[in-house]
Image 1 (tube, helix red, strand yellow):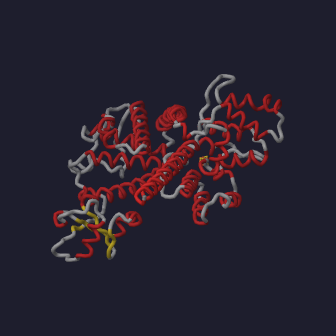
Image 2 (image 1 turned 90 degrees about the vertical axis):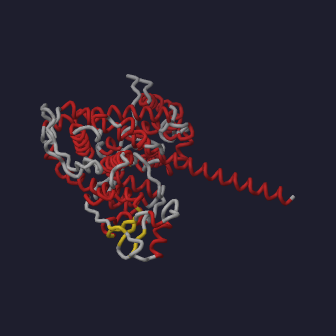
Image 3 (image 1 turned 60 degrees about the vertical axis):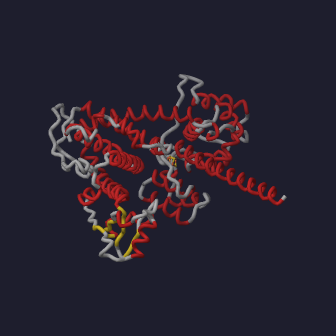
Length: 477
Ligand code: SF4
């Protein structure tokens, strides 16, 4: 891929048939030629589209419908070779940018997979059987007449929703277990004698897994080549422009998140902090909270990291002032607190000095802060704590030994943001939170949403029980 100001080079569409998508992003095409500004524009456009996809899936809204209207014309597959070039160029460049850390790489793979699925779903004519065979999954058709295995057929049909009335009218395929290894834990399909059995209507699920695995492999390859690719001045230029824009977008997003956060998912008073810190704060913030409780003081960077997080979590400035004053009171008299600390807190809220409303730090920024010294407690604990100390801390967090081991293995591989994802999953099993390991405030808002849903469901259940009991009493009377 080059950043020359030439006309786009013609590329051969690998999959020229209209019943297969033109690209699986499994090969990097070296012949794509686009000018620099066009590339920047395409990468930003794609990044914003992936952000939209993330937010739609959080709200459980349809991605298919969204991209029918909002997929940029410049990358639509039904257009010409230029659009396919653009699509591949923006995909691979964004992949290159995102593979600088594990968490962003995973985020990119997740959103790209959802985007790909929506594109496939919108194109009704794609032939999943053919696509899977191109990707190396050899499927065979199950023959109801020849393979007279009634029990097997019943088991396959049992998993289908709704259960088909005329089983012989549906196509069932099977493939080797190794080709679909990831499907097995999801219990989606029936496993029998080393094969898994898949109804035709579910082939897209198998495809998505294969696609995701292929993407993970390609991303790992790109990652190993990142340094040499970045030696190209034009690529560095694109990355720099993109990073600045990304920073701007993330500030806007943080401000929007703060503004739109529902009241019952915010920290409204200083008392909410004590109630929420163990269950809803990421470990970095939870440890700052423990530190302030223990020492009645925070050094500059810890206070800044924490104040901005609390502000982003909706805590009003008056409550923030009350909170810090209360925590500091053992060691700091009120007049000293007013003189030395209150100004800084109001400053973080944009009420002093240049009156800039500062946004909470992202994980990337926190991870890259200077290592804490002495009594300092800022930074990301998965990075700053020694393995021994981290293990001790985790053992106080209500986690199972297995969860602790998994987090420790991420720490060992320097995968700090993935350690954070693991911590979240251990606290909220079977729930996937978006943006974990990317922004501490996203961790907080995901955790608050989950707790709110749990509480609402509990209240509904209690109300139903009450109603049932009342009806029983009335009937008995
Ligand atoms: S990954 Fe981010 S949210 Fe998680 S502990 Fe580190 S800095 Fe905090």
